[in-house]
Image 1: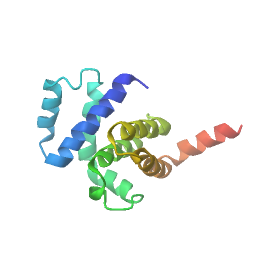
Image 2: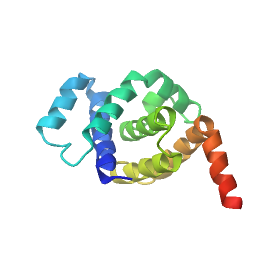
Image 3: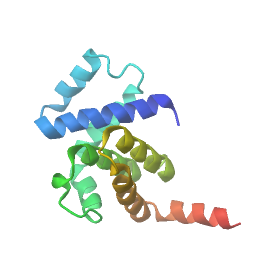
Image 4: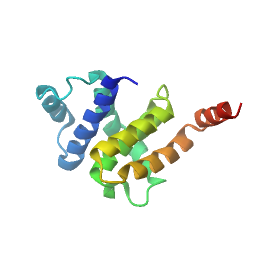
Length: 147
């Protein structure tokens, strides 16, 4: 997985966090990130896809998450919520992205930005979303291990 794409996810978590907390206009937040050169080492096109794709598909994403979380999605810690939303977006709309990559990136983002232990929470939720959204991919992976 490219470091530029990982950096795009990191920036998208920060930008979505800002959007969730302030309700600011998306293009205004994106402009700030570009001006402050916070996307210098990031794949800008992927940042843009995530940053605009999550709010655009928010209802479907939060619905997918709400099946597996222990409280309303808007009550989840805002950092974890941003990470979960990006992970769910990738599992639902980026089928070219292997589910294990999505889970690993989510875990790493939670380790970097979340509270202690939040990576376990993020992993547990995204794993369940993956099983629901990508059952064939997961089945093929586990059958590949047996042979």
